[in-house]
Image (cartoon, rainbow, N blue to C red; front, side):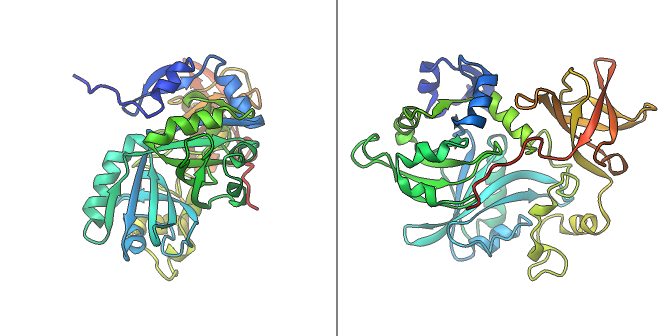
Length: 382
């Protein structure tokens, strides 16, 4: 018998707003609201959309060794993080595969430094065990189940959030800080939040960690802003795919290395061979070898040359029928109006404009290898 689905602190609000709820990573989550995925996607690209991402895991690492300890599990530069700086990181295994991808922010919290980790919902229990097993003797590993997470995304997100605290506008992409939001809307004390200028849509925007008891009031305060409408998992998926961003368990997994995934940039220079803190993370030898010699397969963007969308799992082949790889994510782009996909192919077929065919229910669909992202990133870098 399967366990009952968990609910985020915004569940009642989703139901009130007419969301279509679906099971996702053990939670009952909104896939879309009455206006539909297409409208939500376009609203995020044009204005500001509010996503509930409270199903994701939040973990605090604290102690003098926290940064160095975390570096033993990821190839990122964590020791070099300045206060308020955020970084994308990857948990790797002994073979160089990706156990999960995560965001790491160094905070000044209560007068002392700590690290805030945000991990994927489907991986958070395994990630927590991984952290406790490997780092528990070196630093405090503290899960934060009492924290909700909201993502406000889109070019007008800063306008809307600034009404709740004008100071958030000073943040730049991949930085964060502690803010009291909407004191006049969320009760006299306001909502004490940790806000980062980041997200997974390719747009400017913010992710807001807030205590679960304040989450609904804060969400209502944001939805009361004229620029903001709610959006669900459906639009979040089409937005991140247009932005060329990986979804864990689909585009990356424990059998995929950062180099194969086109994420070599997440292996910091200081952690590479010859760097001051080279290696000393799981799979470092395999990844170093691929950085030097290249991988045999590569994640690529694919644009359909016909109107039929190509979905995850479709086999990719050359004109003679030789298998090249498979599609890992696919949809029809709401922005471009054409089928787009990501997948893995042998490196000799990964060059831009190379023509590849996908087997869609027994019929071959032509695709063109396309540089990622499909739509330009619009992050606020200052």
